[in-house]
Each structure stands twice: as C-alpha cells, then as structure tokens.
Amino acid sequence: MKRKNEPTVGLLLLSIMYMVFCCLIFFSLALIAVKFIIHHEVNIRQSDIEHVLVASVIAGTASAFGAWLFAKIDEQAICRKVPISLKLLLKVIRMA
Image 1 (cartoon, rainbow, N blue to C red):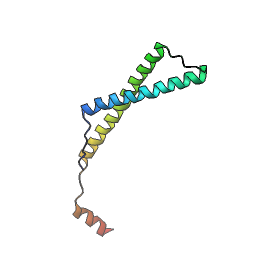
Image 2: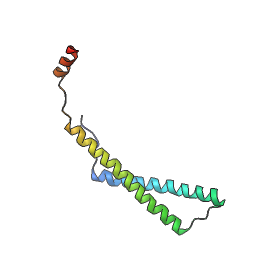
Image 3: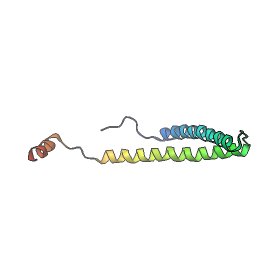
Image 4: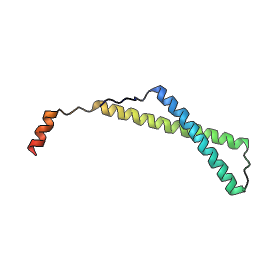
C-alpha cells in the first residue's frame, strides 16, 4: 500500500508553524480566562506574553515533531511488510 502524503522535512516545518500558532491561540485564551477567573479583571503584562510565546513554541515544536516522527516510523513499518500472495491466502483458507 503506497502512501500519498509522505512525511517530508517541508511538511515537518509546516506542521511546526501550524502547531505553534494553535498553541499560541489556546494558551492566550487560557491566560485570559485564568486572569479573569482569579483576579476578576484581565491585566496582561509583557512577561505573561513572553511566557505564552515560549510555551507555545516548545509545545508546538514537540507535538509536531512527535507526530512527524511517528509518521516516519509508520512509513518504515509499511515498507518492511511483505505482501501475501492471493494463492497462499487461498491455501490457508482451504486448510481451515
């Protein structure tokens, strides 16, 4: 079975950018929600934004690289499988 979309380095970089952006949005919304729930006002400092940015880069890079690595491992596992011929399969079915 041939895969149509192979995990390439370009796809890895695109995935990293996408995941960093998604984590940035999620962590920003979480920061606003937590600040509002705890302090009953939204007062965001520059250090908070820096922490959100650093956490987004770390989480986005780790998740995108992990997904890419597992896709690469899966691709190698598919290439190693030996296809079963139809005749051998029919013999096994008839013996059972």
